[in-house]
Amino acid sequence: MMPLSFLTRMFWNLGSIHSYMNWLFTADMHQKYREYVDLLNVQQATDPTRRLVLKAPEHVDAIDALLDALPEAIVVQTYRDPVAQLASYLSLGETARSKSTEHPQRDADIATGVGLIETAIRRNAEARARYPGRVIDVRYNDLRRDPTGTVEEIYRRAGIEVSPALHGALAAHASANKHGKHGAHRYNLADYGLDAADIAQRFADPLA
Image (tube, rainbow, N blue to C red; front, side, top):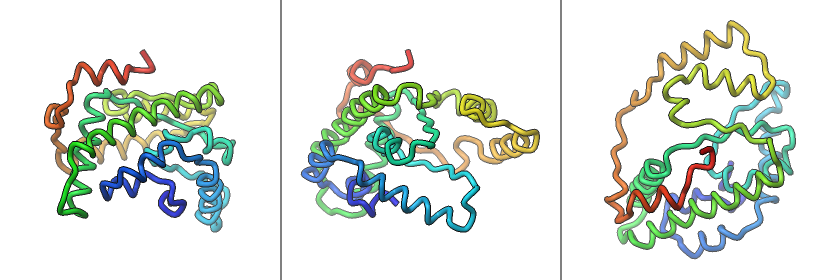
């Protein structure tokens, strides 16, 4: 649903369009999320009482716009070691863009990728200041270590009851979908000419 607004990371994931990203870093996201709510209403038209669970990494860029348009939303944000996260993101982007261009711009792509993360962190902090206490924070490693317990803690913090049937369904899903089920994604920050210690300092853990 994100690309329909023309305000999305999706285009960047598919092509080295740096001028577009420079514009997106400063774009107002409110109209995007008004349109997003319309699309969600379409999704729920046949079953309006059923709760939607949605995932889009770019929500991190505009939590304030999301909550302005959808104040009843429960926002859950996952935190991962910035060194591993950035290496993974750069690797995934490089792989995706290699399918759409014969002339990669690797150095520029790396710089834009780092800029995207920096912009997302800044915008996220500003959104949280506007909406204190509205984001449930989860550590990625906790989710991997204890997926059932971590999800149940999210429910508890959101004020949603976890029934025995839901507990069983969560445990069964976690058991059937172990990390690495579909293979390993291998990456190393050094492959992109970036220093792990520098990135760890620049993207300090906000939950520390």
